[in-house]
Length: 459
Image (cartoon, rainbow, N blue to C red; front, side):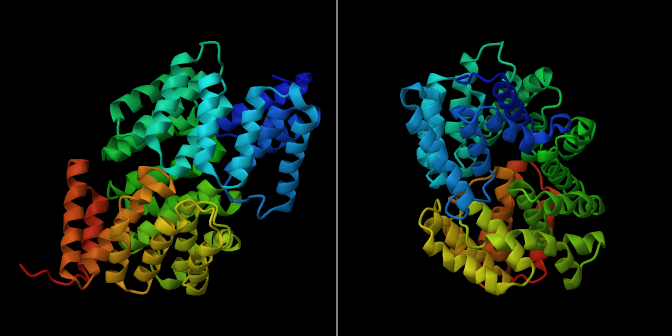
């Protein structure tokens, strides 16, 4: 490392290890403290300063456009690089470039720099993690897969974080629909790091995508002692567990996890991932009236109580437009609270932020479709959503996360007063059955819920 401070190097290692393991090590003060100590130990440690800012930007709830303090820190890093001149090495310069590209919402350009970084420095695990996250926000599974395969094949056994890289590769394989290979890679990761919550999570993804519900529940509960201490991903692990419960006809258990874990963690932690989990779980449960089926409070008042905490987290960000995936979940909370004014403002303000990736082509019609569904204009919802159905991947997220938008289209199509829309909904139900090898509970719920207000289809 390009620093003369042993303390800065130690804190860099602690920061990166917690980042890969998705946990906060209380014995050393957690991520926030290690980042602070890393910068304080050597204010001219460019790689450390860059990592600190990369973590801030990857949180996806702030940017220099919205946060003057963050803007000042980024400018200070750029000034430091200029002042140090030729003593800043190539690897550091590329990380600084990534900071500036992320700061300007130029994610696609950032992947180009990160790919070059991975070609030249395959042992740079922070670069690998940042590259995976950037591809995740772009919905780009194949380049993510190739990048990790290349670096992993050249990474030496002495790299103490190699186990985590196997876990990262497992996710890229799963998102590429290579489930057996992904599970094998996750198992490699867990042999090296038994508490690798990301690898545990990626194995669960494979079981979810293959509708292996019983196996999925067993996996999550058998591994709970390993993943639950990893606070930064624990909410998402409970989210996956709830999905398995839904497809196992255990609606009470699913709602209990939502109320007791997912919603509470979203409000207390206020991270983007926790926000996504809480909003999407509520949204998909309401699509199929799961609260009524579970007899766990199905009134509008109950709904508002559940949505209120998520709504308060989302409302300050309605003009951010940093990521389309964020915007879609903000919209869920506004609609859940019947705040149509904020929902409209979220849609309208997209035009003011041209840096939003796929803002006009995918994000705006997706949000409009959600709005139309809320007000009962099902045909309009279908007309907007069907056109971008296979482009929604570009807003980022995983296959499991984006499935909520498929479910929205199915329900809207079956409730529409147009015959061709009803046929589309029926077709999509059959597609899901083929992909899963059977009719899973979630699909049955979609069918039953929509059928209650479905326009009969004439032969």
